[in-house]
Image 1 (cartoon, rainbow, N blue to C red):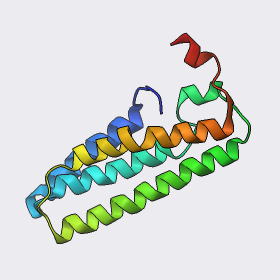
Image 2: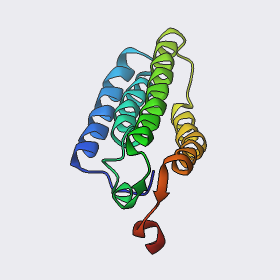
Image 3: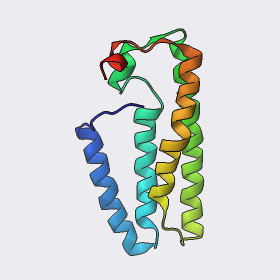
Image 4: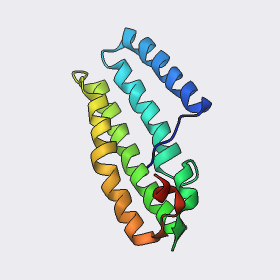
Length: 133
């Protein structure tokens, strides 16, 4: 997962997530955390589950692109299951304040090694984009 700018749809989703979180905070203690998890599910499917939305993948040469995307979709499904379990646990036990730190830990510590594994297995060449940087 490389460095990319958020498009207008992403900015709208983030704004809607913040608004929903503020509204949910009036009714439940962890409303913002639940809204953040909902936004995380959207961004997870848009960026982590496919190679179509990041520019760097257009330079890759795959030995099996379908298998690479399938591996990414499996990881996204695993993150969805995790997020849904966390949402349910936040509704049942509302005392938790480190949701953003937890999501950052998952996306920074867990996802890159898994993507490197998929790259070793299914990517032949990373192309010009990586060598320019």
